[in-house]
Structures are given as C-alpha cells and as structure tokens.
Image (cartoon, rainbow, N blue to C red; front, side, top):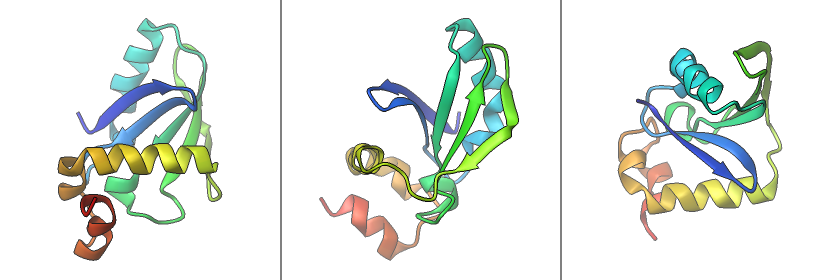
Amino acid sequence: MNYKLEHSKIGLVISSISYESPLQDLPEIELYLKFEQYVGDVVFDLLCSNGNELNRFVTMSFDGSSFNRRSLNVLSNPPKELLVHQNLFYSQNKAYISNSVLSSAARSVYTSH
C-alpha cells in the first residue's frame, strides 16, 4: 500500500506514504470506497511521490463505483486549511518523508520539528 486514506473535515484525503504514487493503487482504492459507499471528490496529496511541486495535490471524483479519470485536476492553489493539515500530517509521520522523492533539504522542512 502506497497511501494513507483519511476522512477529515477537509474531505477525503489520500496521502502518499512512499515514493510510489497512490494513483497506481486506484483499483484497490475504488474497492474500498465502493464498500464504504463513498461518492464525491477525493484529494490526493502526492508529496512523497511528486515532491513539493505544482502537482503535489490533485483531485478526482468518485461516483460510488469508480473514479472518473477525466475529472483529474491539479490543485495548483490548494486551500490553506488543506496545506496546514497535510504538512502537520507529514511532520508527525517522518518515516513517510524518509521514503520519498524529496531531497534532503526538502525533507528537513518536515523532519526538523
């Protein structure tokens, strides 16, 4: 598993936890969301697999059965609440950062706390 799934006040967020993208696990995620009877948008935080780049956050809609891959959208200007929540998540889970594509300098932002 290359992700951590969390229902939060921000919505459903799937965070990368290694250098491998959780987008590779869409079939597995679809099964889980279908079982949970989830319908709506899903935010993917791809920090560990994409780095802290413009494509760090993407969204995709889930119709209760499958992801609409055409709905994939890069959140180039993510809400501040999402950024704060996710940065705290990674600061509290330093092991995920150590298994990421981030450079040593970029890792220190999350591991020096």
